[in-house]
Image (cartoon, rainbow over all chains, first blue to last red; front, side, top):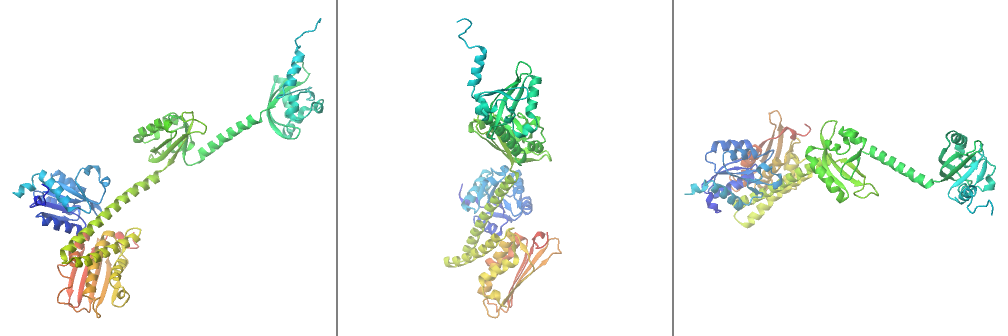
Length: 134
Length: 463
């Protein structure tokens, strides 16, 4: 279940305002056979991408701090639509509002193996990614 | 045997009593105050021998001020009218020294026979009382003049005295503040902790809590630090404690700001590490050997370091574009920066940190290319980096131009269209800063135009 291959064919949204990090993460995910939606650098862009790809999104990787704004509105929409997500953050747990404290979180710099493991687990809970494997 | 009794008669008993009372001055005077008897106690207390005083006015034991104010006469008159006159005042010995006397003057039973006066030295007791009064006065003065809110309390938090400052600050009256009435001014959410601290105070021997107290003037709650301790000489369970409440609202504000700053610092540090990780990954993808990786990665890391050190130097975390450009160029070509080979110019513009970092890395790639293949590698080459502000648009823009000239362009090997530098310029800047960029390989050198929208507050001199 924790095998990176389990992400193959998944459709994941990436939200990250720092280009270098976004590009690197996108490249890593694509090399695992993931179809990356985005990356998006702002809440507006992310919300519009969620809207357009709502029926095919299997999960999302959300950077909490997007310059002058926080990613939480995107997290709310994804929660409402039942799309699992993982936060990436430079913040300690204490700085994350309690409403989101339970969401899985990868601390920066992101350990990609750990990120993929999280994504595989959340994805498999929904039986979405694994369904596409066959 | 006849008529003689074995027990002393009253007169003899009285005389024995008077003579043996060495701690009491006992003397009698005629109606005008002339001494008719003077016991040993009086000798000891006033310093005058009996034979010096008999027939003399007893008024000499009064101070000069009291004599001038006719106090001796008044005492005799009071004693005649009321049957007694209290005598609590400073008296004076033969040697001029003073002591506090406490005594009584009474008229002798047979009218017109004079007076008897009994008195003793109560200086120590008097001074102790005075000291106590002074201490109390000093306490009141201190308690009512310091900025803290002061109170006296029982060890269980029952207030017995609130200072005027407390009354003014909370708007609660003196009586309403007594007992547990003062709790009314404490924030409802803090009341339980406030009372719990009182339950623990007796054991600890002191009270301490930080809680919010309402200011009557505007209804806002301000953080206060409240401390109380038993008064000196009292046990913890003893009757009186004294307490102070100090306004620490500003301090609490600073502390919470510090927490926000620490979180922000965390975020930036970890983000920077992520950027370093990404640069490493991308450099690995684009370089063939470990040696080439080492050179390129090191050079990019130093560019990142330069932006960071510029950021660390400025207090409000904005970087002047001119410093950013010259720092990058100087790092590559220390000699050329001062020569006519390089021209740098533009108005003062302050860049926010994210913009500075992205732009710094892009300039680094341009400069690296120029040093390797372009204007800074060839004797005839020239470089102009200029910028201007377009403030008339809804969102003001910085338009920066990097223009190399006099370069004979190599057939290949320079800043490649698919290279890391062009990726930063053509993709990273538009992504991160919503910039518009144009990178051209002209016949006599590289040209790059970068248009970055900036928030209005980034202009020097404007609000």
